[in-house]
Image (tube, rainbow, N blue to C red; front, top):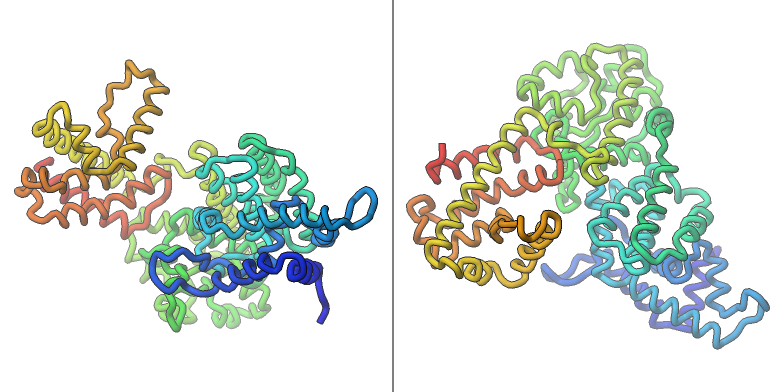
Length: 525
């Protein structure tokens, strides 16, 4: 068989550091096998089944800042770059460096933290990964940012989510991937603090995705057949990030793309908005036109079966009646459907939708940024979202009032100490840290807020159902579980609101009902 540079390095590992090779292979195998028991630490994931040589490449990237394995092989042999001679002592030094780097690559905390970056970017599994190279190299930059430059976890996950999104979409690490990686690693090699690192990667992202790319290159990328192109996968990831529903459904795309849902038939599938057989009857038979990415949308397979070969002007009328105006408008926008598309000429529809699909990707990518620089804002919520969002603070405020009344009435000056006992020291440290953060912003003398104002919504429930206060509220909540259930229906939408995310109609309805029930139980009109 033809050997590559990774094979030579793995062979060298077998000679000089056999345990290192075994560790790589064991980690790679563990990525493919679910853990035997729930909660067991494991690298198993739904994104990638890496090989030992792929993991080795990441270790070399962070240990030596090299993207070209040929050069890394010479380094590991102990070759002196000045004299050209190999040295056993130098080889030992380089292998010690590799061992340190590899331990970071195989660290499960780092591995899982990186996976969270992918989830934040709208990627739910391997079906949305267009390039394993982009994924593994993004892991290298995650480790460099975390270990070498000390970027805080929240900023780093957001940054790496953007980096993976951008490099996958543009195909940065396809073709001459080693050359591109070597160049990118050289830019961060000497950085040791957070700000320059973030600025460097953001600068590269901006260079990859200028305005012209969004307006010209990306729409043109949809002028091809196939549902697994980088542009199409980025479109699905953007829809996930924006909380888009499945077309003609209340369910989210992200939920039905969950790799944990293993069924014999896919729960959702790509549907031709203008059915192929109908197009053929109109004389349009070229696959590049009938199967064009702009003619595809994610629908539940039941709906796909029902649509059959009817033109959109026919099948749309029955589906439209199931949705409110606001829900239909939001769904159409998130699926890049032009107004009146069902009556458009086919080629005009394709051209219009390609542009709108590029805009959805740009909106999803912008949602990976901090609020204020392109993310979805509260004011952009649909009328239904706005109504429910207005109910949440009312319910939350009332819960804070009754918790405060109960604890102050029973424990007076030691009320906060009692709350700390119920929530635990670790949770209370977060409460105090947030209160002190506000105190630094506005001045300690001006910050008269109670610690209770920094307790999360779900923690309010814990305070209410504590044994020594729950008796007070038995008239309102005959069962503790009822209160827990109501707040559990509110919390996901409350979190979406805090992060400026759109909300699935089904979740929105549950939240609205829960808020109203909670307010009624507490006798608030």
